[in-house]
Amino acid sequence: EKGGFDHFMLKEIYEQPRSIKDCMRGRIYPEEGKVQLGGIKEFAEKLKNIDRIIIVACGTSWHAGLVGEYLIEEYARIPVEVEYASEFRYRNPIITEKDVVIAISQSGETADTMAAIEMAKERGATIFGICNVAGASIPRLTHAGVYTHAGPEIGVASTKAFTAQVTVLTLMAFYMAQQKGTITTSKLIELLTELDHIPEKIQIALESNDLIKEVAEKIKDSTNCLFLGRGSGFPVALEGALKLKEISYIHAEGYPAAEMKHGPIALIDEEMPVVFIATQNSSYEKVISNIQEVKARKGKVIAIVTQGDTEVKKMADYCIEIPDANEAFLPLIATIPLQLLSYHIAVMRGCNVDQPRNLAKSVTVE
Ligand code: M6R
Image 1 (cartoon, rainbow, N blue to C red):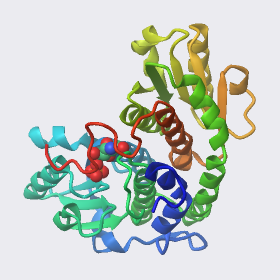
Image 2: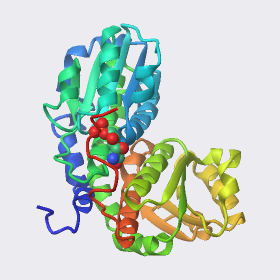
Image 3: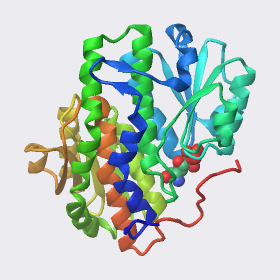
């Protein structure tokens, strides 16, 4: 049932080119520059004039929400707030009938996310769900929704469900932009054509597995690890850190790279591995100066870079290449090496990768 892999987690990591394809099937029409989301179609008109989107989720799904914030604000120009479901439900948040709440949950059973939905619903918001498990409780509570179609995820650490959530959010951002007229058809043709080929780029990213294993060997005995990124590389950093801590029990933190000098930089010495999302996009130069700051303090730098990069290679201790892509799709690709890195470190440390201690696949208690 593990399809020849040692663990479900590894199998699920390798399934991503296929799971993302499944997630996009019948939803994107690159030649026409069109996105179709049957699940939220009946709200197509409403989307033209909503005031704001609130995304509620927990854990990895919350990280997907942060990626969604970048994409929806960039393309559909609708203000987005991303909330931990557990915090949102216990505040007295301001919610109106012109708000759309998007609840993201792999399992569709997370207690805090369900409670957040119920509260927002009582206050008149329209609720969309992004879930992986068909027929779970959350899809039944929402007004409409889009399934991720990633297939069953057995490993407690979310991998393919995360990239499928990000894919759905990307589609939603484009769909909303299309409805609102904040994107041209020619731009959509360009973006969807590239998105259509993202599964192949993920396949290429997976081919760095042996190199990633070597890097894992070098840092597996660390007690701490920092993950830094900017823009949509920031949620990728958060996700990389969560993955490492949950399966390898190494203390890890994700930060926006620029926040480093407001505190975490004090932690850096020769014992501290720092993983950078340092791909060639709008924040490339800024990230390079952050890498220099870490090197000046003798930190060990592991960088996720764009294929063919030469600048970061001069500074970093280890570089892992990923194919070049539009910034909008960076999280889908840059996440892959981080999943593999935590996986190998956890295996090397003898941890129970598929069922880490103290964790459950669905958190049905608050
Ligand atoms: O099923 P959900 O997406 O609602 O679960 C939310 C979190 O419990 C989940 O993402 C958790 O953080 C994972 N173990 C992360 O890998």
